[in-house]
Image 1 (tube, rainbow, N blue to C red):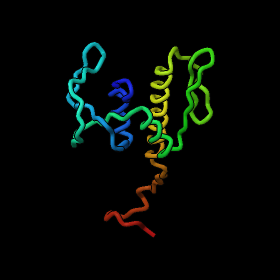
Image 2 (cartoon, one colour; image 1 turned 90 degrees about the horizontal axis):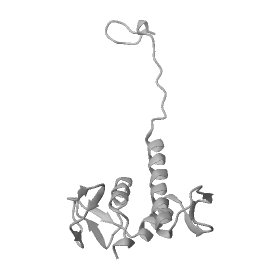
Image 3 (spheres, helix red, strand yellow; image 1 turned 180 degrees about the vertical axis):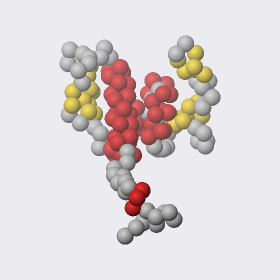
Image 4 (tube, rainbow, N blue to C red; image 1 turned 90 degrees about the vertical axis):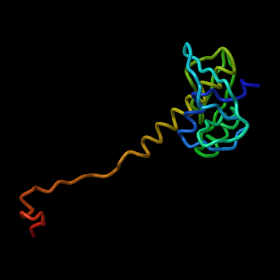
Length: 141
């Protein structure tokens, strides 16, 4: 059943992007990293303030589709590949699950880059020479 849930790293990224849907499980925030893998000792059924929600893959994909109009399809040709809003990947994957995880990572990456560009300032700063001001900082007409 654990394979139905988004891995911890992606769940954390989803949280940072604003994912706050109700989930069946949450990750214990006291995870331990050993040999590059997270060891999760506890799953919680009850929501807490410091939780990292553990969405099902289908919940995460639905969230991207409903909130950001990012749609995906996973298809098998010679190998598995995914498309996001009609754009094919160049990589082939050995299993559906590999393609699914990489597709989710790409959706997160797309949204993170969109969020960064949404937050960048779009204002211009114009400087006036200091000689235009008097000693009290008032603009000279």
